Image 1 (cartoon, rainbow, N blue to C red):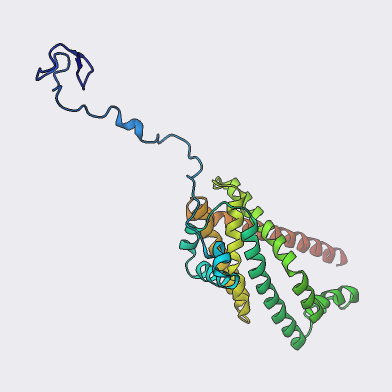
Image 2: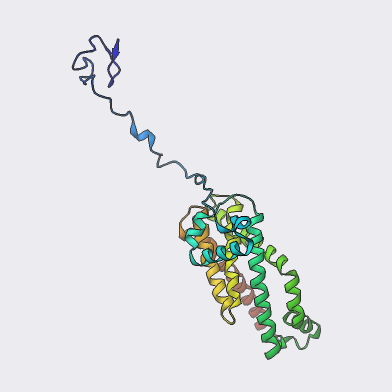
Length: 270
């Protein structure tokens, strides 16, 4: 006994040209039922983005291509093609590999910056003359700017880079959580911050290297966070700039407090 493909009514005569129940042609295929059910509901809350392992980056192929070649190629791609790089970058796989890249390239930039600073201070002298009435403080700050301070940064620069990485990644991920943009875990944010350290190589440029590298690093943060968390560039930009805005507000508040205290002291002296 046959069934109508349209209404599933039992057909007494399978050879009939029309169904006695719905009038449809039993010889034609039925249209798909409720096609709207296949589409996602517009009211459904956005969940985490689908799995995104990435196509791979040169740094992950350093065992095959060579450490130095992978370092150079990765740095070139981050600086010149950040969008393509972050799209290809895996968002999982552990913190060790991106941390190693960031420490190596970040240490190079830190040493270059300390070297230029030591040369500059040896020529123009210390910039902490305001602490002349506190010789112990002036001596400590002058040591930081001296060649001895440069050697200390060479030795312990890797530790400074590691601390800075985790602090920066933690702050950015916290901002993403506050803004509702953290669609992946901390590792994805940490990987963006680590590979954005490629801008440290710009510190090799005298005079303007730190400024250019710092600005381009913020740009890489925005591009990388937007890509790995699958959010808009506006929300990623807000996550990057919000800590800077809060820092400026805190500095302005402290400045206002000190200015008020000084004004009060001056008023009492008069």
